[in-house]
Image (cartoon, rainbow, N blue to C red; front, side, top):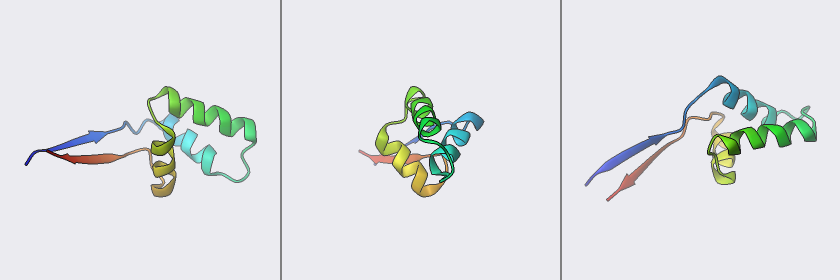
Length: 65
């Protein structure tokens, strides 16, 4: 049984983008830019949703083979 860990980087600008998405006071345009920054960094919509739920851009996925 093999385990592989995949970690998405926790860079300050990615965390800031996540904060903008979760802030009720952020404008629609700011949220669109923040989402695009995350997409450009390799995050999918599902990744972004999961990060918003946990409050961090760090995501660890374990795959079993």
